[in-house]
Amino acid sequence: MREYTERIREAAKRLLSEQRVDTVIGFRRGTVPFMNEPFLVKSVDQVDQLYWDSNCGINLANYLPKRTDRVAVVAKGCDSRNIVVHLLENQIKRDQLYILGAPCRGMVDKRRMMADLKGKEPLHAEENGKEIKVSGRGFQVTFDRQTYLQSNCAICTHRNPVVYDELLGDPVEEQQGVDRYPDVRRIEAMSVDERWRYFQELIAPCIRCYACRNACPLCYCPTCFVDESRPQWVGKTIDPTDTLTFHFLRAYHVAGRCTDCGSCERACPVGIEVRKFTKKLEKEVKELYGYEAGVTPDQRPPLDTFKPGDPEPFIK
Amino acid sequence: MSEWEPKIVAFLCNWCSYGAADLAGVSRLQYPANIRIIRVPCSGRVNPKFILAAFRSGADGVWVSGCHPGDCHYIEGNLYARRKFALLNSQLEYTGIVEPGRLHFSWISSAEATKFAEVARGVIDAVKAAGPARHFIKKQAEVA
Image 1 (cartoon, chains in turn purple, brown):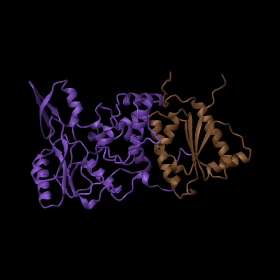
Image 2: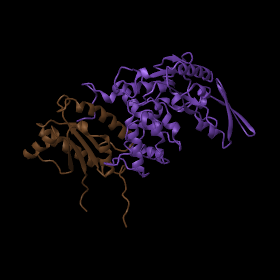
Image 3: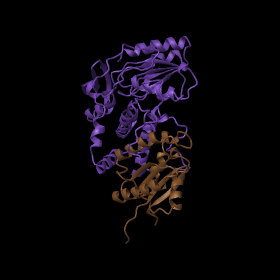
Image 4: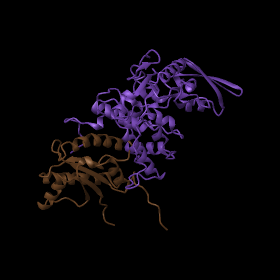
């Protein structure tokens, strides 16, 4: 994926110098390995800081809602789906956007690599196609890229952007025959008490920092439900009930809109698998309404519409 | 101590189920007194936050009732609500917040007083079978 770096810089230089856009949203290298940071380029002399490798998991669609300038944005498959959601929800206009589509082979999970380094501090990481070479003081390790993919990337079925103005590379082969919901089925098979305990343990480390919310491109409400105080429907403490209410409603808010980009999980400082909440809803939406978020630009989101014969087996 | 009686919060649409409850009363139809009615303008007004808040405050059951599909006073409020509740219902059971039998939905028109009394009895029986709420109750700070 490193080869995109040059293409992104070239495109950014062209778009900015021709004044096609005012801002280019991409990534630049972070100060430590595995941590690239989102970067908003506003002038041609910053263009050479743009960068691309397997640590660009943050969803750049998060920087688009309610922008008034013309922007170019680098978009992986999931980012582009979130851009479609933004377009459907009138958060930005298509003619403001210039989408640099990045066919993606998945981003890597920094947390698992760090765990396998067992406390050794990586100082330098270099990747080539299939491998990631990590070195630090007195050690060198090679990780297989495929085994360390982010969990949502491993089951991704939309690696190529769905909307774009220009592609940064040839489309990649989509993963075929992926089972997206083994974990959901495993939880569904539990008894209700087991499920309750499972989710209690899952969210036990939560510190209510709202990083999952802030990293999510779908969370752009002017006042988030967790910040409402009159009336206050969601308690602000780290009481397990309040925390579960937060996680439940966050997942419910993104029902039928979530593209499973994994930003929430990536952003969590305590490593909670918050996608466990959203994936069940994704599965339900697919089964009940046959909808996949951000894939079709002309279909309203499932909770924004209805059909006369929607299933209602639970209603008396 | 007397036998445990469940507390059930019922969100009833002003234009149908609330009228049905009224008609049930006028018609002297009998059903146990476990439900606490909250009148809402439409089943579409019922936000998932309300249902969670009811459970968090100790309700043993929640019942949401609105107009039959196609009969909404606001044309389509209950049709949006139906999709909302379908996802809410499955997610609440999935996370173990609500055991089967605690959360109920129904369509009852303002003429269906008999159905109202029947469903009310059904809801109360189901919640009784589920027992006192255990999972999702916020413990209040003890005041010395």
